[in-house]
Image (cartoon, rainbow, N blue to C red):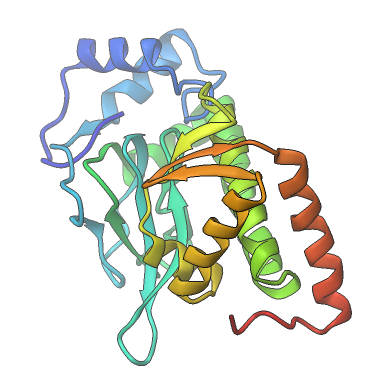
Length: 258
């Protein structure tokens, strides 16, 4: 599933891409085979790859399609009253972008590529009838929407119940699990986002995030070199994430202003 001109990919190319894609168990084709997969193949559009910093869509744009990230990464964000970006999510290969626009018909957030990114565009006006005819497709779409709700709730819990160290520890563990689901290493991975974007997502100052990475490395919890991270002590990070949540609740969220 790739990204950006409105050129529709040749059916045979799509079939090869979908059937051989390493993300097939995470994306919409899960549980769909044969003629049903071919029907889905016919509506998928392939666009040119997005360059780093290029928008997939902007806040307020009319909702026309869902986008499955095939390579690279996308961030979603909104702007606060001062015009500053507030990052709301990071989308990795195998994840859908745009589900939150189905209800209102307009995108409530903007989506921008964090690096060179390929996506598959799935026009919703053509996907919706298929979900009524293909039960497996409908179930998969509902499953993905449910997962997004769970992740939104987890993000709110991350901001509301953990101090600074707990937020970063919980985020790194979550990212580790997401990479593992994609067949990549759970211990060593690359952070596609900048420290500024990460700080915005965690509700922390950039200096706090940088200081915590330095501290975690000094304590042997991880190794960090530029955007490459290796988790040396996942158990220690888990203790911070869980313990910090409990301490933060008892202190009514102290640390949220770090």
